[in-house]
Image (cartoon, rainbow over the protein chains, first blue to last red):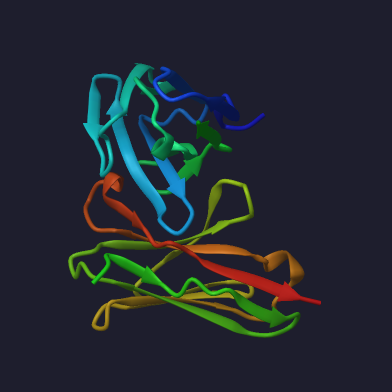
Length: 112
Length: 111
């Protein structure tokens, strides 16, 4: 089983719908992140959390919100999805000592 | 100047070739550096960290040049399985939330 698990892996939705992407981890890491990846743009940070009570905006947080329900769970919500939020979304955790990021397998979201 | 810049490629090389990727970064205060590998439609995975003194892991060698603000990745004796996109990642702060990813360099190793 993967150490960082994302659900759903693929989702097609319509403009205006609310979408939640969920992430859970068994690494025991405190630090969790949500990134999006677009062709030609690379990975960009949406939100990050260093512990259950800590939530921080990343580079591109507009249109997104997050919830850190527990150390192991970090969910990303799109309150009203729009087509330019079509992307591949990655959840990640990081090792505090090494800084190494461990990514989930990704959630491919298409907004029509 | 973009924060982290890589040649997007693609680099098409024959098996057994040596290939080198460079990556430049704009923030002179950057503290740590990494190369990640991403296979098509998969998640990125750490390939190696880049240390000031340079480091080697089998066929892979990473080097850092702080004065010129670039890092490099050298792959010797390329294998078909090396085909992937290589991401340069720079940590500009003490916390890993300040990681900046390059857009990646695509490598295709041809039989």
